[in-house]
Amino acid sequence: MPKVLMTGSAGFIGGYLVEMLLDQGWTVVGVDNYSKYGPIKRSYDDHPNYHFTEGDARDPLLVEKLLEGCDHFIAAAAMIGGISYFNKHAYDLMAINEAIMGASCDAAIKVFQSGGPLKKVTYVSSSMAYGSTDRWPSVEGDELTIPPPPSSYGFQKLAVEYWARAAYQQYKVPYTIVRPFNAVGVGEQRALGDVEEESGNVKLALSHVVPDLIQKLLKGQDPLHILGDGSQVRCYTHGSDLAAGIVATLENEAATNQDFNISTPVHTTVLELADVIWRKIKGPDEPLRYVSDEPFENDVQKRIPSVDKARDLLGFEAKVTLDEMIDELVPWIRHALEEGIL
Image (cartoon, rainbow, N blue to C red; front, side, top):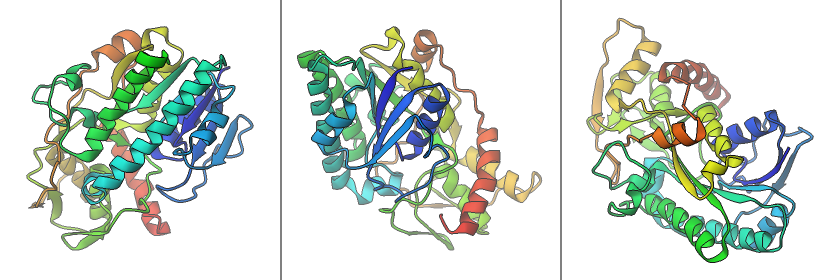
């Protein structure tokens, strides 16, 4: 089976990706500097086909060295967080993520031109590339015709896609761009750079809406505090589905020099989500009680992707339902709170 380098292998989506690739027989070379969560243990750490290096993906010489002999490169490393993170680290998100992309592309170009086995670079972008859209569902290609995203994070993720196309245009390095939508799953811990925020009577480091709503309710918040009026629309996609969609692009010739939305097509408002989580924790007959907090700047109001291209070219369709995600997350977060890792 082929060999793949993945930057950001200790991250949230990275964890799902590494596990799936190893299960399918791939050899995985991982690199991460643990800047998101700090050192964490994974079930596959001692797997004979997993080779991990603690290091900085901004180092082009390190990335180049690790990429030698690899058939694929998944460029997944990035400084990333939730809506509060985007606002509090607006400059760092741009500066650090651009440095990572520069190093990734420089290394890929050198290794590709050396005549080694490298077939393609798979770039992990984001649904935030569509941050300024006024049309739904978002179809691949819309990002080139709508205004640029208002947040520095969204703008930089759009820039990732320009890096990919530029490396192909000038140096003929083949690419695939993947845009995950609203990742949900177990294993997401409190980011080291997150700052605790007041949310009603609960202090927490705001990250992503699903685990944050669960945390608030498990900590006894009543009424539940939500950002804005709850009309924001999202498509919540399980980490295993995101991994499956990304893996489906790797050896598929139809994915070469293409971009894909990787997501469920099922969309849910934040208020609908809050109601589902509330009833699962409080009981099915307990009506939702909530109050609205002042929303953050640049909180995109609607994200709905077209998933036709991924289905038609990759045969990929997300499988995990929102109910299944919440049923998995509630006990995991309860245990994580008890252990003090959230």
